Image (tube, rainbow, N blue to C red; front, side, top):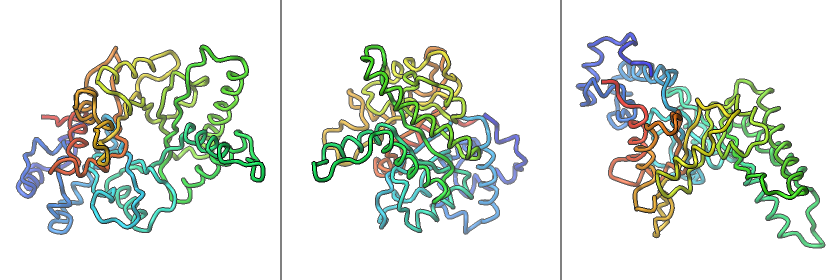
Length: 345
């Protein structure tokens, strides 16, 4: 990772920042631990804040473990700072909106602010399984008077046309392609043919979109070992393995190693876990079986090399709930960030 002390920032600036923010110069690398908004440095010392943002931009360009955070943006009348992506830790690299359409004006302003000030990219996920589930739901609700007019491939094409149109509509920085698939080992011929047809259609549309939009980023999330054609992964910023249902750190390792096969780039592997669900009294979401918060487990697990695989990205789904987890907002997310991108002492 590029060291900040190689930037043209004077020692005086470091000392001044340390006094104002009451953090040591050693902590400057740890961008996410500096809460500039609450210190109101942007208003009290705009020149210093501008220098901080310049340094933050350089950090985002440097070689470091990428941090993704998906947030539930369904609330359009915000009553908590947790609803604002501007309050996420500054060193989050990529924010994913769970609800990418029908954005409110204040959401568009937040997107513009994190992009311009903090060099943060904003994306959303297009998930094959979600599209398939929506089609199956239509089939279940169909009647003789109102049958489903489209077959799945037509439904898939229409769904992707709508979903991909949101990139230009809201000027997203790119998309995350969600595709888990499944093992083809024991599929019957008819099932296999349909499986291949569906995946080919989905991946080809995504590949064609990327060719026509080279300036946009794509990230993959799922089980890459199930892909028939893995060439799409060559264009992906990260290859995120889904650990959302994992109940132990060993399960994260097992899931990661399953993806370690030929033809899949090893230098972009990442892991995504679930944040705590505040409405889950049984603590079944966002916790390991032993009661450990999954995000805390990820913070311990991600810096370790697993079977010669270095984790180069981490992600948290529904991260906005972490705002309320402890007294310190985004406590576990900040812990993940400082774990995978530690300060250079």
